[in-house]
Amino acid sequence: TAYQRNNRPLYGSAMQYRESVGCYQVDETQGDIYLVSKWDRSKVIGRPNVYLAIDTASGLIAGVYVGLDAGETALMACIANAAGDKATYCAAYGIDLSPADWPSRGLPSEIISDRGGEFVGERINELCICYGIDRQALPPFRAEEKPLVERAMDLIQDSYKSMLRGRGVIGDDVGERWATDYRQQAILTLDEYTAIVIHTIIALNKGRVLTDIGHLPVDAPNTPAALWKWLVDRGKSTLLDVDAGELYRRALPRASGKLTRKGIVWNGLRYLLERGAELTVGAKVEYAYDAQDTSHIYVVGKDKRLIPCSLAPSSSRYDGYDMADVAVMRREEAEKEKAARQTELEARVAMRSEIERIIRQAEEQSPGSRDISEIQRHRTNERRRLT
Image (cartoon, rainbow, N blue to C red; front, side, top):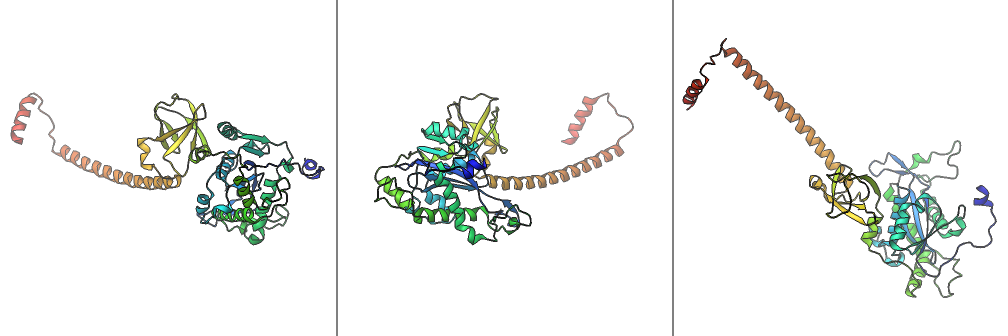
């Protein structure tokens, strides 16, 4: 494997170039930096995962995912980012983006990847079937057939390494005896690191000079963002225009559960299927969920259609909140319930004390025997006295 990866002879470029935008090379790597928690900066949370999607014709970095997840969920988030509006994405990290600096938008018509589990799994199969995307999975140890994404990974990390030395970036001696413990140097949160990656991508898209565009006319621009626009303006685009909301829902993380008479339970919240859904009680179902919005989950039907499920009345008070808010609300509810339980206990203790006092008083005043011979007459006399 070392020979195939590092020593095998290469004769020219093995990559098949495209003349139209819309063919994305995708890959994943682990960021060479340690991060800290945004809630408590004294806690190190490890290294982030970075997924990239690069357009083969223009070299533009079209999509990115930076996070703690890995696998199919992260890959789908990267593809959804590639197809979505970058200005909105950047604004979430406090970055004011000019559309010309990151112009990609739309779903690719072709995806090139290696044979990693997430790149040949069920989620990507579903996406390709739903939207008619062609997919090429390269043989093992053939990184030279997708060099754009391989090189982009290095360019992004090389861009910030010198500025973050001593701030969590790992060095070449990582893992060796007496090496620096780079975990102790971590200072950045995931959001801060993501913002750094975004700034790096914008700079690479806007200003990186391309040297391998000999397959295009001589008047073609030689920077990714300009070349992307140049190709699109000439109708050289195979991008797919899809509904952003539908694609977002398909890219959501998924879980599985059991459909009961009372619905589906996710994280303690109960959801009800829409009327007419062809699912039977007791069936095991797969569903997509959005941790940022608990109002709906989406069951994946047999035809891969996403069936929306709304919150049941018993969980409707959490409608519109994200899971972090729900967790806070539940803690507050638990504290209130605990206080109410204490009040209830104190009330019951007081009640028992008073009842026992009344019983003792009644026992002290009770005679030794009872007259049960004429209960009805005694009842009539008692009523007369009470009135």
